[in-house]
Length: 190
Length: 268
Image (cartoon, rainbow over all chains, first blue to last red; front, side):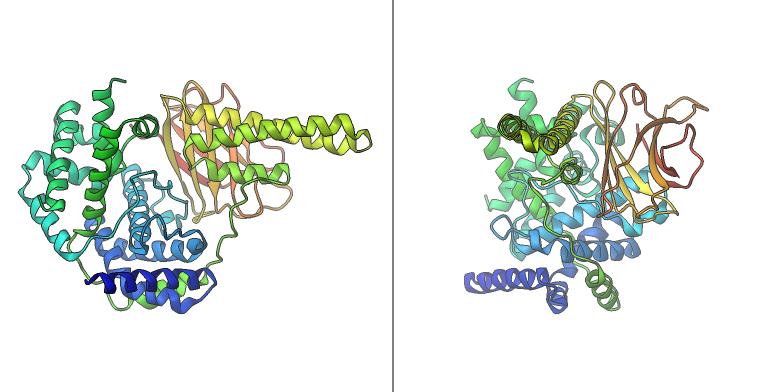
């Protein structure tokens, strides 16, 4: 996207959230058309279940509608705001799956996620960068890639990853760090 | 923790998988360490990328209508109240604070102390309003004690988290329990249905032993917006297997009889 198109898209998104905060349902439709694909895709990658991923899309747009008044454009673009919600809602469902308590409750979980701390806001990346990252992820040694995927897409703690992969905790921490350094360099185009 | 040990947490921090205690320890460290801050900046970029580098799949066309209809039908939350005008407002703030870093709660506890000092001054000056100010003082002192206790729990190194899921009687309800064997148990609830005046939500702790009886831990103070916060009585939460809430007669009962509202088990 050209810089001008980028700024125009950013402005249009921000304006839509402002209208949504005032109760404008058509603004929600606009945001759905632009971003539901990204929300659905992340949920699907994490849950491997289309029906549940659809439920997450509903959870996220419901939360966005309710909390539109709290969106702060200086912290992250709208896609970042939505994807942070997507990951939080999906991790809630993954945890509920693991504890096997009340599957009937999943449809209506509405707890607020933990606010992202400094350095945890989600910034938008372009298609080229996404493709570079995908290639770099595939190119990582198995141990590093698996650890990072279990951490990011399944929300497992480092000790749970160590158990899942039958590795010492220290090895898992080192592999995550090494893998992330390589992915960071790939993203920067080094 | 040594710097190397803290640095080892930078990846987990950026990926959002650290425990509450590790998260807070690293967050405190990163504000003073340029090397780790630089690491986190790079890793946060990777985390952002991982969310967007997944294979892009369009959702089914029929989803759009269903989602938009459901989403726009819900009530929007009123803006969060930062400084309460009454004791009840304090509890509403605390239930949001339970999901926020302990640092914010610490600052709030400090502001409560200041408020108490102001009220004590007012008490000296305006004896005609003494009864009203005295009542507010009690409310703020209770809230300040509660805030200190909650802060101690959230800052404990042995902190565990238990999510409580809504049951058939209240499928939309949700609870998040924070448990430190050393400091106690605090639970924040959301989306609890309103109750009639002759009923109360009661919090139970079931120890992890086979056949253990539920121990009554607290009665919930339900806010009009469906939120509540419960601080377990000391000694009732030294060993936790399951946390649950039932709907009982006002005043509470010695053993659970009513509908189960939310429940969660401590995972290993």
